[in-house]
Amino acid sequence: MNDLQKELFLANRSCIKHLKPLDRRIAEFEHDWIFSTIDKTLTAEVPRDLASLRQQLADLVEQDRSEVPPSAVYVAEQMTLDEFRILVQEFALDGLTEAQVFYHLMPRLSLEAQMPMLRMMIDEFGSGNIKRSHTTLYMDLLKELEMPTDLPFYIEANSSAGYSFPNMFCWLTMRADDPSYFAGVITYFETVVPFFFECYTAICDRLKIKAHTYYSEHVHIDVYHAIEGQRLLKAMDVAGDLDPVKAWQGICMGRDITNAAFDAAVEKARRLKHFNREKVVERAI
Image 1 (cartoon, rainbow, N blue to C red):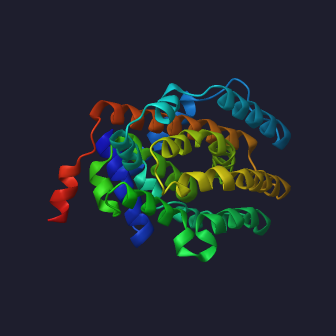
Image 2 (image 1 turned 135 degrees about the vertical axis):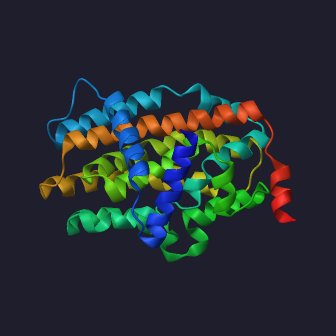
């Protein structure tokens, strides 16, 4: 699984950079992974329309808000600096490429639906200011933690779960048969991040990490992005493009993949305890 997620990540990078399609073996792996996760997370009740989708989403968000996972509690209250480096490492593949794949989704949306997406992307890319782009903010964090800022290091260092998060977004934006999957996922994420990322802001405060803006910015700005997500769903619904069932499937799938990735990253950090500085030094020689 680890090697296949890594291969899928590299294939996605090749697709993005060189327009090279996935080969059959990797495409089949991706399909099986995505749809087995959708099947695994199916709920007995599915939304019939936008109103019921919004209600089920609100109920799920409230459930997540009230049930803080032990992994998040550990990050906030006990995780050491070196363990935090490992956690940051495991999400660097996303942080160093954040939202770049979203461009592929835009032509698939109606013009009205593109507007809320564009407003979210403007924030993701720092309103055109490279110093404020979310990838730069992640690089600032890596620099303070004395970690590499280049993608190849993390391609070699990461575990399977670290690849799964960006791989999921590549499927959502480039190969899913309906943008409704993405619309559901992005609205869910933007709604839960302001309270889920509190474990990150807490550890940054506890460990006196100055380059916390990647996390604190998300806690602030994603409150507004959650509103844009709702506008995206509405615009798609008005245009007749929203499939509420697929949007809900996207939400449940995305939630499962993200939670698994976070829990696996925290478990890896607790197990290894020490960031591999020797590997960083070797690359610098």
